[in-house]
Length: 171
Image (cartoon, rainbow, N blue to C red; front, side, top):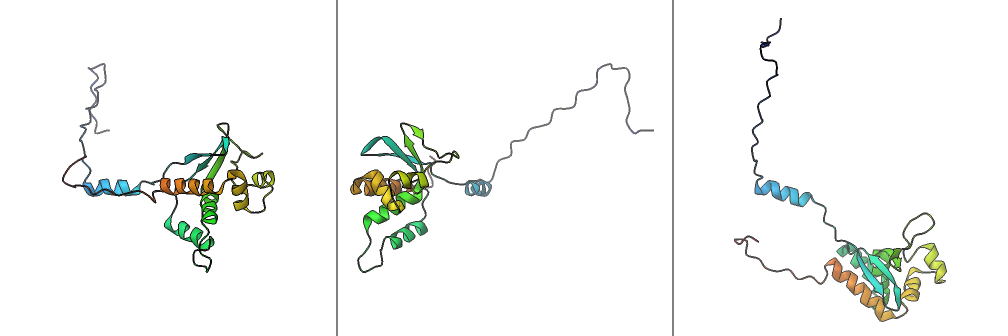
């Protein structure tokens, strides 16, 4: 025998009671946990190559201070000669390039992977042995290399200013 009482006089089954929805407020601590759990990533930027009107390059502005220090060191920062600004700019561009566009289309290799400055195809096209030489061949004018690297660094936030806020006022 079961503990359930059946009612055979009512031809339609009883509808279950509606669940009571309770609005659960998150605490500020829980909101902070959620915010800090989010991955923060800046979107790629697209910069045109000044001497090549059909060509643009996409760069990832997600650069760390540690990367910048390594690039500066590799450009000769602590040497007797000092840091070579164009070499530093080439390092920035080589390490942040995510793709090359021509006529608005992403250029890919035979496997469908986006080309970068150091890809075999690019190196062969410009007859370069080093990535910095490929970048110099593509940009032609050295100040354009430095200006492009500066734009990448600015997009990364190295030129951002931080504003003071009043925490008692809500945005």
